Image 1 (spheres, protein in one colour):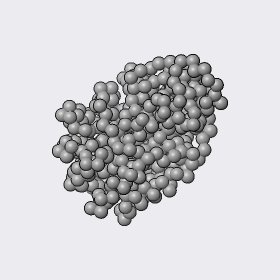
Image 2 (cartoon, protein in one colour):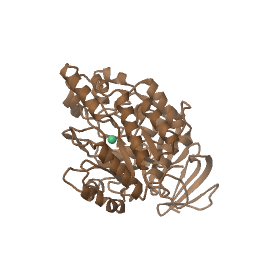
Image 3 (tube, rainbow, N blue to C red):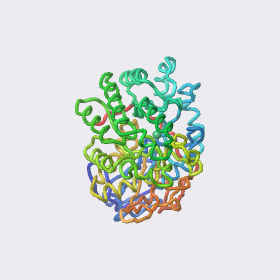
Image 4 (cartoon, helix red, strand yellow):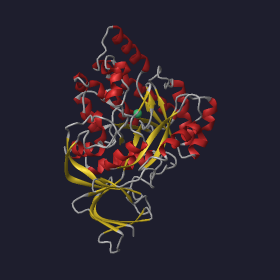
Length: 459
Ligand SMILES: [Zn+2]
């Protein structure tokens, strides 16, 4: 046996139990009490949780956007992820307007393959849907990519899909068994509000949020859900931020549509007051931060199963990049870091504050994303035969989050000074240590592209 993790408290979506886990050839080969076999490496996990590796299904590494590129490349971004207990990321390959889907996958794999330190998969972010490209979809599925993202906003940035295109992709998703991811905001209204604020000279960071009020997301989510129900398609709303959107999702789920929602740690824990600080532009992302009421509603949505996943939308722009919009919120590149802090923040604020159980945390950070995105049962579970993507989590480990002790290339943290209790201390990917007792022992390029199968509905 290559690795034996002894005496840990193994966590699944339904149970927590004491067991040893044995690993050989990158796979889990044994789970039980007092496994007798010897191993090349034995780690004692007494008093610790043993979790299936986290799956962050929403990252943007090395992504060109708003005239600049996210500063975390696939090496920095996945290193930070590994420290945060993430063993697989799903990154958005943004289709250049003149490229096919297959060319886009090739382009993204060219960036990621030599650099990743954990495993990864790709979603296709569609920017220019033509008839020819619709015909290419079966080949994209064969290449291991089974999720396509469409944007309702970002018309000026060239990313927008209109309702007709969204409808047609939802029809295809039903026919071919893939998942459509939707960035849901009402583009026409937010463009109108931005233009009105800019014309009146209202250019500070708070007007980013004021140009995208809750209903801008709520209405768009409603529209997306209606199209999903009408087509019988498979729909996943990314980065949900509002109680209005949540209510729409709950209703459509109750009516039996195959629809899912994702939220992010920043929508659970931070509010739009951040925009009033001198560095408010650091918190500019779309949709924006909301109110305490929205935070609490989203926690409830996680606890009651309305929301299925938590993802980071890790999208890193440095202070200098954010300063491109020092005097004008419309010029601030949108995005915040998160892949290293997701699980510690969820644990501290969610499990620690009794908003969710640790089993729910595992469900929304590993099991559900694995199923929805076609990684299960290879990933997302601690089972015999599954990849040995394993995290040892120390619930007593206390740390004050700071740019000084995090591993992203970005030069600030949105959680600066935030105290967490509970941190991943070991991260194994396919049985190989990447983080070992909080030290990086991984290797650039050792992560693998994971071809994904069809979307699996959650029961
Ligand atoms: Zn995103």
